Image (cartoon, rainbow, N blue to C red):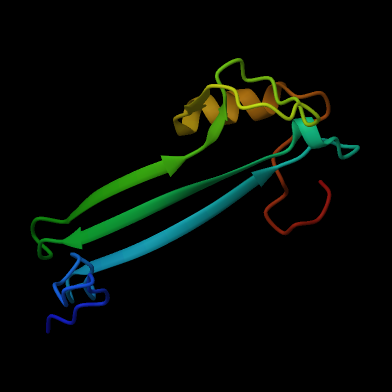
Amino acid sequence: MFVPLAEDEHGEDKGLWEPRPDEKFYVLVFGSQSQPKIARLTHTWVTFVRVKQHGEAQGAEIDYHIISWLPTTLEVRTFRFRVEPGYNLHLYETLQTVLKGVGARPAHPSGADA
């Protein structure tokens, strides 16, 4: 069933809809911080995933997009109050960058210290 979720000022559909029964959408939010916590070594990134099922025999089609925005220098300057060029990192680049931070480490799956 098609149900528009947003309309423009003329009542026209803006292209948003409820997912079809064969589609699933996921949002995965990740974060990294140093020990001890230092703002310039903290980063949050998001992955949006769309899974479209093509039937049991054909499997699923998976599309994903990552937002992991950092300065092009990859150096976060927390007290610099000027605009600087940014870059959207891929997942592998993000993991490399956050693990370079002094004391940075992936969170334990249970949320407890390893």
